[in-house]
Length: 331
Image 1 (cartoon, rainbow, N blue to C red):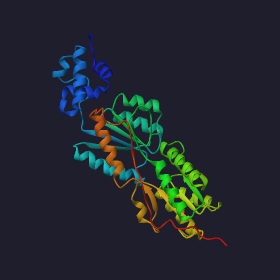
Image 2: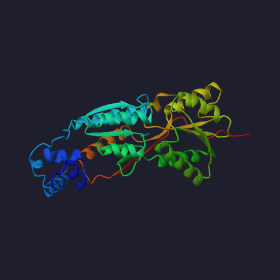
Image 3: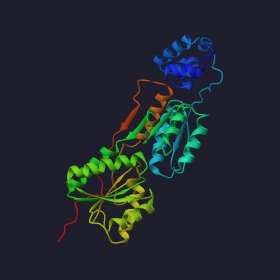
């Protein structure tokens, strides 16, 4: 091919232009199978000089990974970032973190800015349009966490299985009516939580009361508590620690005891559930598991390790603490 470009090689080799750059300029930076495929395509296209010389117009590796999160005040994301940064540092990579304040427009704008200075990028709980994410991935290796935009690689927590564990636990204690204080319905994580909860409740013949969606902070917990007390539920599942803490504070103000009157479970990957009293029963991945998995996945993506799975899941564990007990007796 006369005048073949880096993008021509990338398209035929089914890798990114950045991977072509690494394969030809720094062969040790990519998987051997990928390097061979890129070199073969380059030779077929008559791009022989690229095998020996740096590629003109292609960004050199920076040793930096972009981590885009919706809310740095959320301890779940703080925990994820800490584990991910440590894992990346072990591999000689630096993390560049940005907070989007849960705004889709801010998310894609910041991600586009990062794409020019990072070797790979992670977007947690993405809100941007899938088409925008796919376009971004053509410029920079991109991993989605708790979100999907096929065929982009993704990593998700097993929310549905977590809800199965929660309902099994509460049902075994004798709870027959369970309430749910959910989050933003547009997110992948929330959709999976609701699917798992509804299926588990039906299987266990437990009545499920959906209180609606609430802000992911303490204030959301206060609102959820007032809604809860208008129902006959004897247990409630909250989306995170903040909501659970706000809910328990409001219940205490209204003379309702946890867990004697109401059992509380929260779904959160943070470790702050043990800083409240009573300590919260929680369902979450093991400590640091999400951040470590995120770092490993994006490192493989940058290295163009084609054998790596496109979609991965992280298992969760139920930790039974002091906030759940048998329901109160009636009569």
